[in-house]
Amino acid sequence: MPFYDLRCTECKSEHNISASMKEKSEKKISCPDCGSHELETIFRTPPAVVKGMPDFACSNRGSGCGSSCPHAG
Image (cartoon, rainbow, N blue to C red; front, side):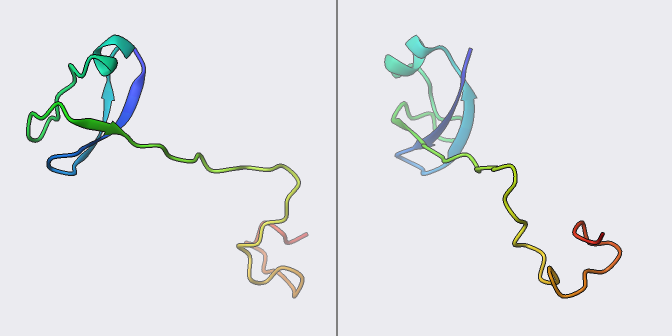
């Protein structure tokens, strides 16, 4: 069964719930906190990882990285 990220429209709590597509479409899933069946899907954008892109998190890049820096060569 797939997992769904759902938000309760009554109490605003968010949950990751395993349920069948039929249970979701027929609103048979209830909020674990308040029991409401009014749940909406939360759409999240997965983080993008692109190979070959520079690591901009390193503030020392290009100015003499320290030995613990992944850019140190």
